[in-house]
Structures are given as C-alpha cells and as structure tokens.
Amino acid sequence: MDLREKIEHIWTARAESLEVDSDSVFMEFLNELERGTIRAATRDDDGDWKVHQWVKLGILLIFRDSATVPMGETSFGAFRDRAPLVPRHLDDRHNVRIVPGGSAVRRGAYVAPGVTIMPPAYINIGAYIDANSMIDSHALVGSCAQVGCSVHVSAAAQIGGVLEPIGARPVIVEDHVLVGGGCGLFEGVLVKEAAVLASGLILTASTPIYDAVNERVLRGSPEDGLVIPPGAVVVPGGRRMNGSFGEQNGLSLACGIIVKYRDTATDKRVRLERLLREDE
Image (cartoon, rainbow, N blue to C red; front, side, top):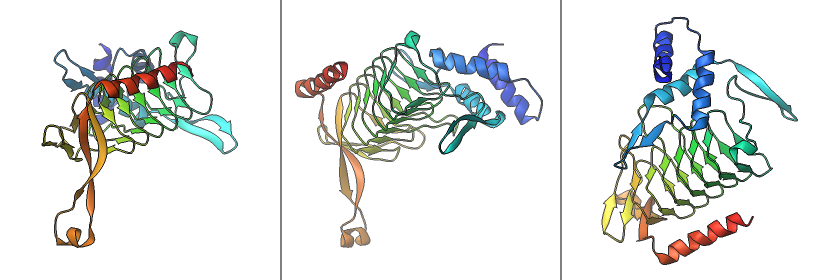
C-alpha cells in the first residue's frame, strides 16, 4: 500500500473499532509532510487548487490516536502535546533562518530553504511555506495553510488553519504576496499571485471585496471561499449596514476595497522590503 492507502486504511479501521498499528505510518506521514512531498493542497497546470482530503485525515488521526505527553519543563510547568508532534529541529541542512526569541515549527510542517522566521512566530502541522518567504514576529501560519515563494507574512498576521470539514480548502497565499501587519485570512481564502493586502485587513469566506478599479463586487462562499485577484492591492473598508436600525445608528460592516492593481510604484516598495530583509 502507498501512504495514502495506509492512512485511509487506518481511518476505516478506526471507524469500525478495529485495532491497527499506526505509529510507523504516522512517522512516515510526518516525514513526507516535512519534505514537502505531500501537501494538503496543490495547484495544477491550469492554476486551480486541489484539496487532498487524505492528508487532512492523516493529521486528524494523529490528534485522535496519539497520547498526550510532556514535552519539556518551563517555569510555567511542562508543555504537553500529542506524542509525535514535537517541535521540529531545523539545522544547517535545511537552510532556514530562525531568529532567537521563541518561535516554534510543529512537526509535519514544511519550511523551504531560504525561509526566515522572526520571533515569536508559530507554524502549525500541515502548513507549507515555500522558498524565500518571511514569517514575521507574532505571525501564525495555521494547520494546512499554504504559503508560496517570496511571500512576506508581516508582524501579527494570522493565516488561519483548517482541518474540518475535511474537504474545505485551506487558506492559500500564492507567490510574491505581501500580507500586511495584523491581517487575518480565514475560511479558505485564496490570495492570488502578487496581491498586496494592507495592514489590518480581515478576510473570511463571506467578506465582500469592492473592486473600485473594475467596478464590481467579489464574493465568496463557505463552499468556494473568497478569491483575491492577482496583483490586487486591497485595503480595509466599510459599507453601510442596511435597515432602519443600521441607518439610525450609523452602523457599518467590514469589507475589502481593491484600490489599484500592482504597478511600478508598488513593486518598488516590495523590492525595498526584500532588500532590507536581506541586509538584516
């Protein structure tokens, strides 16, 4: 059986209350996630993303089947987690720069060569961080989130994780995206290549995006998620709340506004950030 068949066999056995040896399969599964040879989602030649449900099944099985054990003493007591999920140890072979100060990469996360992790940051199981990206201070990359090449996830940004429902698309950030400080991306949001998200922008499946350049409204759904177009520069905005109560009280709801698409000035700013990062 290949690894997918092994995971699905264990899942079926658990559903039928059958005993099966899973420890060696879990170790193989985590190793393959860390090598980047399996992923929760991959992009095909047409640019469409496909969710691999069996990878999520494997992660859920580890959570459900593994014992919780101590993982090191601190002044606050012992950390405790599922037995296979010790923090990753990244050395010179991985060519990843982790600046001292309290960051952690959980087992089962892929971190490509050239990635920089500023403290304190956290990368969860199933996450995929591609080459030359930066995960800045207080940033989170959640379970199964996919981050492309040369992406800057700025300070305090939250790339949300998702395991269930099993078929749901994880949050995906494609290559050369700038995620501004304090942004939050949740519920399977897909940010296409070279987009720029301004600081403080919160995006979910139901957040409407008002494209002021093309005079259209972009909407997602819990099933299909929200898609940010390539090269879009998106800032936080507000829209008036309908109904008499909203009007009487001057209420508004959050939205995103595409104010422009990437141009020379935007690219110069992004290049400057890259140069400053390389000189740190």
